[in-house]
Amino acid sequence: MNTILESIKNRRSVRKYKSDMVEQEKIDQIIEAGLYAASGMNHQETKIIAVTNKELRNKLSTAKAQFDGLYDGADPFYGAPVVLVVIANKDYADYVYDGSLVMGNLMLAAHALGVGSCWICRTKETFEKPEYQELLKSLNITGNWEGIGYCILGYAADNSIPNIPRKPNRVYHVN
Ligand SMILES: Cc1cc2nc3c(=O)[nH]c(=O)nc-3n(C[C@H](O)[C@H](O)[C@H](O)COP(=O)(O)O)c2cc1C
Image 1: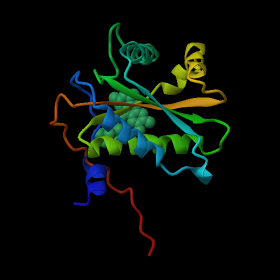
Image 2 (image 1 turned 180 degrees about the horizontal axis):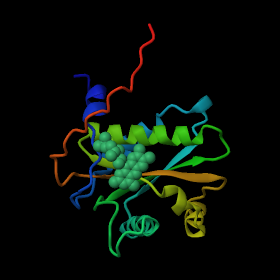
Image 3 (image 1 turned 90 degrees about the vertical axis):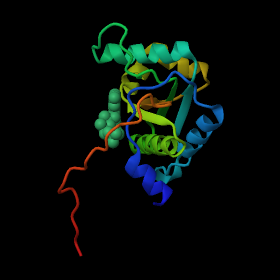
């Protein structure tokens, strides 16, 4: 099967990871795929913050757990060692679509390279907090940015994730 079609059909959200770090070369390739996502009027007003720092990774995970009301010590990043934070510039009308397409590209590229991934939410709420606005500033990111999603990355601890059937009656043909 064509490799892009294969990736689209067989990518699954991975929710159990080995602690092994993903090779930098693969992280870079995945990020590059995100940067090549189409964007409304080609504004390219999205950014990706690649987090391999364990302390920050754990803080983001804890923030997500708190927003979701999970038990103390829960890791909603499922042990994944890498978090790609996708943010988009709210000054542009298509920012949510643009950021979401970046997320899609990241997940497909990860699958194509044998790396597991999952979209994790609460990026918006977390990056609204002053502490994380400060983090953006420390990276020289100024302006009106919204968190779109976390793309967690790592090697799957369990490769037997079942395929998820597609719901019927979602396509209409007008010939
Ligand atoms: C906008 C969005 C938010 C998501 N947030 C989470 C999340 O916080 N935690 C999680 O485990 N999965 C999350 N997912 C993954 C979905 O649950 C998953 O894509 C869906 O169950 C279908 O499974 P598949 O990705 O294997 O096809 C999210 C997906 C999307 C698109």
